[in-house]
Structures are given as C-alpha cells and as structure tokens.
Amino acid sequence: MDSPLLVWAAALGLINHLFFHKYEPRTAHFPFLLLAAEPVALLFIVGVPFSPARVLCSYLVFLSSLSLSIVAYRLSPFHPLAQYPGPTIAKMTKLWGLWKQWQGYKHLVHKELHDTYGPYVRTGPNELSVIDTSAVSQILNFGGLDKGRDYESGRHSSTPPSIVSVSGEAHTAKRRVWNRALTSAAIRDYEPLIVKRASQLVSRLRDQTGTVDIVCWFDLFAFDLMGDLAFGGVFEMMQDGKDVDGLAERIRGSLKVTNMSAQVPWIISTLHLFPQVGRAIQEFNDFGKNLAMRRMKYGAASGTKDLWYHLADEAGLEKEKPNLESSAADGIVAVIAASDTAVSAMSSLVWFLLSNPEYYRRVQQELDTVFVDGDDPLDVKKHDELIFLSACINETLRLHPPVPTNGTRQVHLHQPRRIIAGRVIPEGTSVYLPPYSLHRNPDYYFPHPDKFFPERWLADSKFEKHDVTAFIPFSLGPANCVGQKFAKRELFMVLSIMFKSFDLRFADGFNSEAWPGTRKDFFVTTRGPLLVNLTPRRSYV
Ligand code: HEM
Image: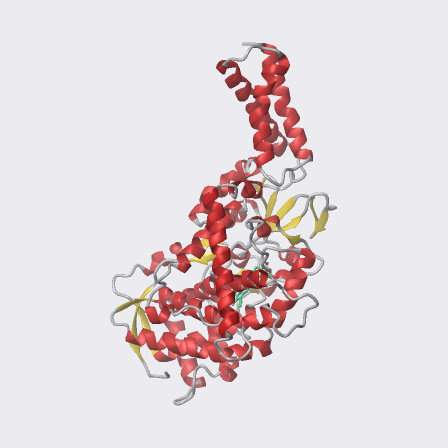
C-alpha cells in the first residue's frame, strides 16, 4: 500500500484532533461531513489513483490516528483533569456510562465510583462527580458555577425555552416569574385544588377492591393536580382510572432520550435533522400550546389564581410579558417537574413505612394524636405538629432522592478556571453533585448511612454524624427546586389523609424487597408497581 497516503492519513488524524480540541464543535453535522470527506480527498491530494482498498486504508489509518490521539491526550498527565482519580474507561470516553444510564442506573454507578475513588471522581473525559460538602455551596449557590450544557442541550431550536432549558439572564427572568408562582401566599391559593384532588384520590382508592398499585394511583393524582394548576384542569386520569392518552409514558420516553442525549450534546442538533425526531418534537410543542390555549379560553380550575396565572404573568408585573409558547413550555415543565418527583417521594415513603412497621405505627399514632376525631387531616395548620412524619419524609428524600444524580454545573469553555474547595476546576469541566451518593456518605450520615432511621432528623437525635449541608434533595442556589414548598405541602396533605383513611400492607406475594431496584434514574426517578392492600380506617371524604 502507498506509504505517503498512510503517513498523510495518520497526520491528518492528529491535525483533526488539534483542530477540534481548539474549536470544540457545538453540532455534529460539520465534523461528520469533514471526517467523512477528508480521507477520500487525501487520495487526490497525495495523487494516488482511486480504489476502494485505498479509500478503506485511508479511513482506517485516519480514524485510528484520530482516536488514539484523543485517548492518549485524555489519559495523559497534560489533561487538565489528570490529577482526579476515576476509571480509565471513563477518562477515555463519555460513551462508557451511556449503557448504564440507558438502563437507569446512573445514580448507582456514581455511588460505586465514589465508594471506590473517594469524594472527587473523574466520571468522563471532561466531567467530575463531587460529594464533598465544602464544595456544595461553592458550586451550587449564588456566585457558584453556571448550569451545565446538559440542561439546554435537549431543546430543539423550535421548542420554546422553559425555565429548565435556559441559563444566565434568561433564567433569572423566568425564575422571577416562577418564584412569584410558588410563594407561600400563592401556594395557599392552590390548596383548594390539592384538597379536591387528594380527597378524590382517597375516594377512588376506597372504590378499589383487592390489590392496588399505589404508584399508579399517585401518578394519576399528580397529573390531575398539575393539569389543574398549570392548565386549568385538563386531565381526569383518576376518574378514568388510567392514563388514557399514555401521556406519562410519552413524557418518560422523552425524558429518557433527552437525558441520554444530554450526555453527548453535540449530537443533538444532528438527531433533530431526522424527520421522525422533528415531528415528535413538534407534536409535543403543539400539545403544550393547545393546553395553554384551552386554559386561556376556560380560565383557572379554581376560579382564582393558579400556576398559569403567574407563569403567563396575567397580572402584568413583568416589563416584557412572556409569550404563549414560552408560558406553555413552563406549564409543561410544571407537570413534569412536579409529578414524577412527588410521586417518587410518596411511593418511597409508603415503601419505607410498610417495610418498617414500627415506624409506620408511629406515624399513624402521631396522626391520630394530631388529628383527633372530626379533625380534617387536610387542615394544613396542623401539619407543623407532624414531627415524626416530617422526619420520615426527610429520611425518604435522603435515601431515595427523587432527582438522584441531578444535572451538572459547568465551568464553560473560555471561562477562567475556578478554585472550588481548594481544587482546580478547569474550563470546559462539567460537575455533578449527585444527591444519592452525597446522602449516603458515612462522613456525613453515621452510623448506618444506608438504613432508614427517621430518628436522625429528630431534635434529640443520638446519631454521631448528621450533616444537613449534605442534604440536597431540592438542590441549592439560584437554580434549586423552585417548587419545594409546594412539594412539601402536597406530601403532607396526601400522606396525612391517606394514612388516616387506610391501613396499608404489602399485597400477598408482592416482592417488596425488589421494589427499590425498580427505581430508575432518568433525571427524575421512574419506579415500578408497588402493590398494596388497603383497609379503610375512617372516612374523611
Ligand atoms: C419531592 C418533590 C421534588 C423534588 C425532590 C424536586 C427536586 C428538584 C431538583 C433536584 C431540581 C434541580 C435543581 C438543580 O438543577 O440544581 C429541581 C428543579 C426544579 N423543580 Fe423540583 N422537585 C420536586 C418537586 C417540584 C414541584 C412540586 C415543582 C413545581 C410545582 C417543581 C418545579 C421545579 C422547577 C421549575 C425546577 C427548575 C428550577 C430552575 O431551573 O430554576 N419541583 N427540582
């Protein structure tokens, strides 16, 4: 074979690495075209006759040289993250963890890596995972790192921006509107809707005979509630007893794809060139827009201020009113962000209590003491007295955080490096602070960091270590969970009325020990059926 061609092909591989290293591509189309054309063009440049064998050799040598050069650099002491430990395969390529991630086990992978390598782990060529509390605030809080590229990367240019997909000033503007939508006063306006839907949940559960999948009913409840709040009452899933249009499945499918593709952001806009992907995106955009138009036509389900009222800035408080598409995108975010998260928390809490009968009894006793006969468990004024239920909720969020790995924060390319907790975070680095691993770190929760011990949250706790700076189920800082007060209100209301209304036990034959393994991390958590039997205690609805 012609050695000049092979030498040039090898050199071209190295030159391409240097070029793309300096000018990191935002999309894959241009690099793909370039990489496909170069080895063929080389035949003409070197002046050798065209033949399929020469083309093949040129490709092989070119791609081998390019890949070897990339891998050698990533593993070399010259790479800016060289001092951080991690598995070699993770340092070489981002593709290594995609399979685990596709299966929904990213949180477990991060945990395993931290157990092996310590609090700072290199989980990708330009990616770190950190579970050091002295870094938490410096990374997440005001003045910390920006939201990572993974947040915006799933969004096609035709999709209107939502609070999740924007950063910088655009995020600050959206966040102002969302903050107004989720103040304590605003949440009080939403309470009648929570009361209505929580009562309906209990009454529908009463209609069921035999075994019940409580996860499924929590799902139906959450969609109905968020449909009321965000779009004036669009779903009646509890009434139907199922998700007739398969909305939840569609949302979860798109979450899975977005979550995966966010790992390799440069491929997104190329994927979007495929007509099927474009169509699916368009359909989803239209779905949001139609819900928004329906809400504008029929008004709020409560007849008063709902979430949409704030998201669409109906009070006209913003200098620039958000357009319909943008508010619709936020409304859809509300449905997604509020449903899977809250459902995960409620389901896990039920699982933990049924697996620990002594704690379950204690929760029921507390509820029976706080809400004596005739008291309404949906009366939020009494929820502050539910100290033990509150401890159980915290312990659930610690062990089963509904957002187990969370998205990244980032020192963007061309930004100066940052020093965080005394360590250098170079430009172009994405940083995870995975709640699942942080919450189970024995340096912060000891003893028995993996065990459900609600007592550790009580004022007279005897636990040796209980460092609440390592508790971030709702994240921290300017992009933390804006809905956390609402989420807690919802959890207290639903759990109070449910445990007052029913005695629950795992259904006969249900493999309860296997249930935590059905929890999958696709940014928010999905979970498998949780089969229980319900025996009515007394009626509140
Ligand atoms: C137990 C329930 C919930 C948990 C554990 C949870 C957790 C989180 C987490 C970890 C984030 C990511 C923050 C980050 O990037 O650092 C987040 C973001 C967000 N959550 Fe929640 N969430 C819950 C319920 C809710 C509810 C009920 C709502 C709405 C009513 C909501 C709305 C949002 C929104 C809009 C964001 C994006 C905030 C931003 O980018 O500024 N969440 N949530």
